[in-house]
Image 1 (cartoon, one colour):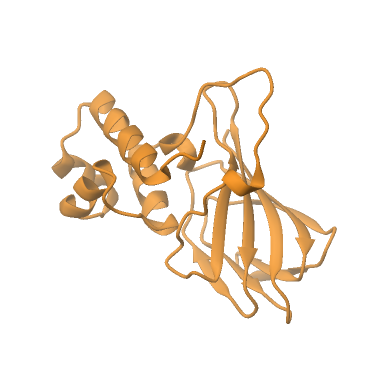
Image 2: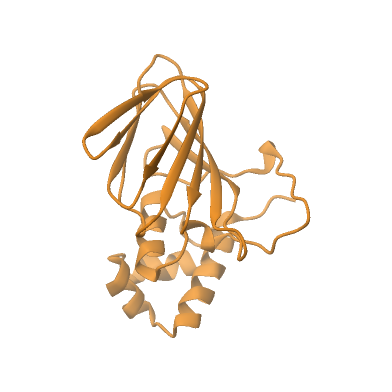
Length: 184
């Protein structure tokens, strides 16, 4: 059964905020996301962008997928048809959570699809976070510390993601890659 990802995000955000004993106002101050927007997200009335979720996660000091994490099972099968994309603010950059950070696992994994000539700027993640990118289709450029790395199918890269970084598709076709985020 397909979950309503916006309701899941809202429910988890409210739980995490409550665990910290924070008001919506405190959360707004810590994340630079408006109090009305945070309220809409908590009620499941808003479809937050990837950028907004990163700002909230960083402000709370939690993993990006803390908003959708579940208890680990012995084996988990993820059906592609059941994976709902998170909005990035640019419909040409689609992020689909495949494996969420679980309480005992310091990683999360995403399938990312970029339309041709798409350019996406990511803010710095929490201190010590690393990204691992594995390209399946198309070409993608990853820019880290003003150094650009062009990747093609079967290429991969690892980089420290606690600094701003950028993704851009650099071919005529769609770029598809797996992104694994490691929290230390």
